[in-house]
Image (cartoon, rainbow over all chains, first blue to last red; front, side):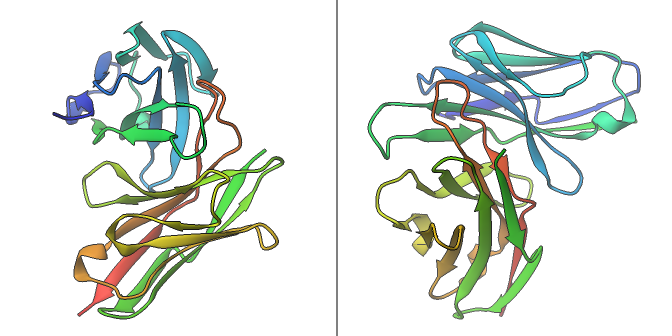
Length: 116
Length: 116
C-alpha cells in the first residue's frame, strides 16, 4: 500500500486550462502539505493543512487553491494555468507523535505538470 | 528565518570511496535537520533526521550525519559508495514541530555521481 499517493503522475495541459491534482495518505497523519519543485530541483512549500485547517499559505498566486475534504486528502486545484506553473508538485504528510525521534514526514512520488 | 546551504551542486566519487555531502544551516532556534534522497523521476525518501537527540544520526543505506552546533553543520557521510547511491540529495531544516507549522526549508540539492 502506498503511504502518500498522488494522481495523476504526469499532467500535460495547455495554458489557460484549469486542472486538479489529488493526494491521499493512509498513514493517519494529521498534517498534509503541497511542495513545488522547479526545473532547477529547488523545493519550496506552498501550503499545509492540519486536520482540514489551512495553516501555511506561502506566497502562492491565488490561482492555486488547496482543498482538504478530510484529513486524509489534500487536493490542489490550479486555475488559468501558465507556462511558469510547469514543475513537479509533491504532496506530503507528517505526524508529530510526541517525544523526540517520532517525527515523520512522508512524501508522495510527485506529479509532473507541463503547461504548453 | 531558517535556511540551508548545500556546498557543491555536483559531487563525484569513485565506487568504494567515502561520500561526503555538505550542509550548513541557519536557524534562530534549535533546528530539526533532515537529509532526503531523490532518485530520478521519484519522490523524496527520508535518509535520516536530527531532532535534538544524539548528535550522530544513523540512517538508511549506510548513511550517517553529525549535528555540529558550533559549526552549524549537518554533513552527510557514507564510508563506501555504491553505484546505487547515485541520486540527488537534499538537506532540509525545520525550526518547529508545531502541528501543521513544521514546514521544511530545503537546500538546493547535491547531485551525487558514482564513478565505476
